[in-house]
Image 1 (cartoon, rainbow, N blue to C red):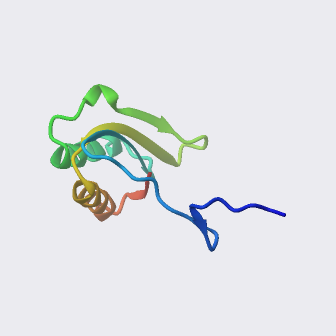
Image 2: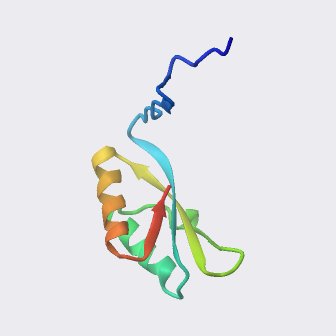
Image 3: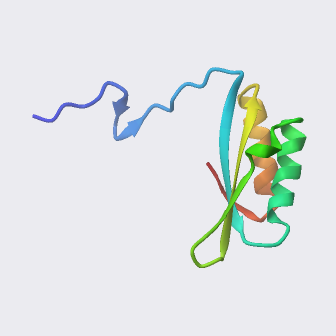
Length: 98
């Protein structure tokens, strides 16, 4: 008989709890463009002033159509993360924020 994890109900799993403040890695995926990294970094700076720009990594997709920008911010709360997510999506250039 298959045992089900106590955190799994109806095929869904509870999201992990985040303890703020914390160092929070974010991966932003969008259409490749010469200014994509700058656009993302400017938005991240608005929501996490003074984040470590040395943490920024950019990777092109295999076919060059997409780029991912990875950053690590000092997250202070869920409201900050939600605002950052909405600002990134509002550009119309970001497909995913992970």
